[in-house]
Length: 216
Image 1 (cartoon, rainbow, N blue to C red):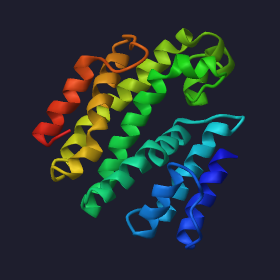
Image 2 (cartoon, rainbow, N blue to C red):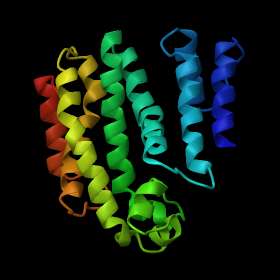
Image 3 (cartoon, rainbow, N blue to C red):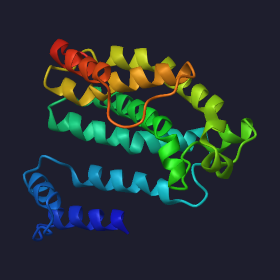
Image 4 (cartoon, helix red, strand yellow):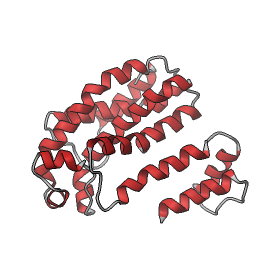
C-alpha cells in the first residue's frame, strides 16, 4: 500500500498534477517536473521493492540479485544520473549499488528476523538445509550462507571498482556506498559479526577519504 502511494505521487508529477502534501513528495514532484528525475526509474524502484512483500520470499539467487539490482542498484543509477555520470558508467553504478544492497541485507539479518522477515534466497538456504522460518527464529544459523553470499560479493567488487574509475569527482559521490559495501562484505565473508547501530569511526573515515580521493 505504501509503495502504491509513492507510485501515485510519481505519476501525479509526471502528469503535471498538483503535488501531494508531504515533506518528501513535494521536492520529489519538483525534481520530476524539472526533468532531474525520470518517473520510469522511480516507478521501477517501487516495483523492485515489491519482492519484499511476497509471501514466498526470494526463491533463487537470481531473484535475489535482480532484487538488489532493482532496489539499491536502481537508486545508485538515479543518483549517478543526477550527478552527471556518463551513461556508459550506469551499469557499473548499478552493480556498486547492488553490492551495497547485498551488504545491507546481510548486515540487517538479525533486525529483519525480529520483524519476522528473511530476504535471503531460498535456494541458498535450502543448500544449507535451512528454511526462512528457521532463520527468523535463529538468525545465527544462517552464518555460513551469509559468509558465502558475502564472499561472492567480494569477488565481484574489484571489477566494479575498475569500471567506475572514469567517474568524475562529482559523480563519484554516487559510488561511495561501495566503500561501505567492501568493508562489510569482507568482514562478513570472514565470518565476523558486524556491530549493530550507527556506523563506527573507521567506516565514516573510509568514506570521507574516498570522497577526497575521488575514487570509491
